[in-house]
Length: 76
Image (cartoon, rainbow, N blue to C red; front, top):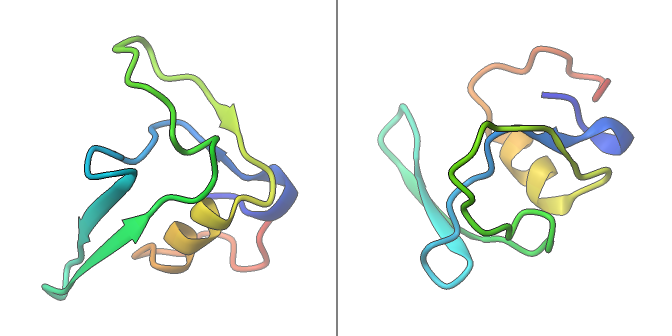
C-alpha cells in the first residue's frame, strides 16, 4: 500500500454511515473513521475495480498507518 504521492485505492472503503466507516481490527477493537477526502467518497458503481489515484490523501494515510502489515515503511 504505497503512500504519499503514489497513494491510490483499488477497493474504496465503505462510506455508508454519513461518509464514515466502522473498521474492526484483529485485536478486537473498533474505530469509526469519517472520510475527509472527496476521492474516498465515490459512489458504488458495481464494476471491475480500477486504481483511483489519491496522492497525499489523509484518508489513505490514516488507513495505511493502521494496516496489519506495512510492506514498504518508507511510503514508496
